[in-house]
Length: 174
Image 1: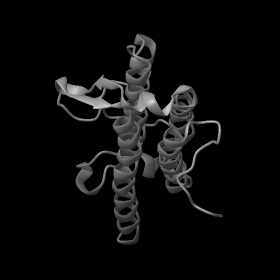
Image 2: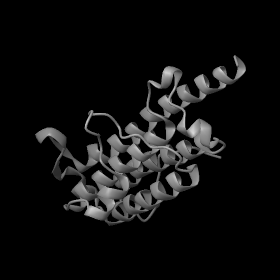
Image 3: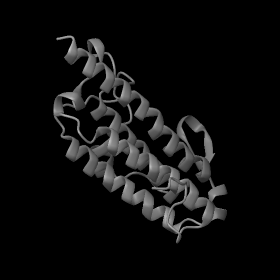
């Protein structure tokens, strides 16, 4: 298998490259979590001080959903906000999630990823310069937004890998 940052040929070249990075990281995430038990998905690290894999997967889906609607030029519908959000709870933390199966988390994330894929098929390279409003009054180009999604996914994969390491170590030491 040859790894590349090339997405579907029907996408404009730069959009395809950015989408390729996004898609590669999304599939990598699914591989990392593929064999996790419910106990491991809900595990929050030593002394339960960290975000669980379930929280991180839902968080990634919510951020991707936000960017889909930024690119599209609209707001997240209330039903999707209720399903995937909020980004942070009243304590300014990723909201807790318990007893949601990996299958459900990934199925929900698949829906969001399919939305991102569909909008990438519609984007043209010259639209990547379009500036959208980003959190806290910031602005960003669509190009940066798609890159950010791939980078953000990879960033949280490192957290998930660390949770997996701690989970296995705790099981060995019991």
